[in-house]
Length: 104
Image (cartoon, rainbow, N blue to C red; front, side, top):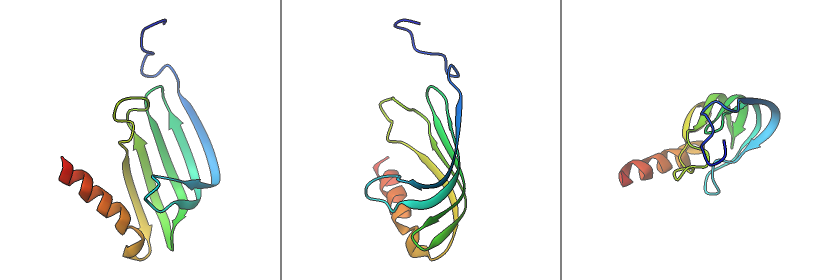
């Protein structure tokens, strides 16, 4: 393996967690009281959340996927989430999505 990249599935790890905080980025609200599973491979991370809170909104479901750990675009992540609460709680995420699409 010396000098060669590891195979895509050389490492498969799952970590269950309860009552944790999810920090997407410094400029976005943090999710609290989250529970779910984080799945890792050598190149990716996928977090599936079963419960949590974003400001005053309750999380119904969420999947957060980072497709390229350690790559040049490590800051890229896909977030698919459903919340039950006021729109103002998720507006910062909508604004971020708009900025990303406007730069493309």
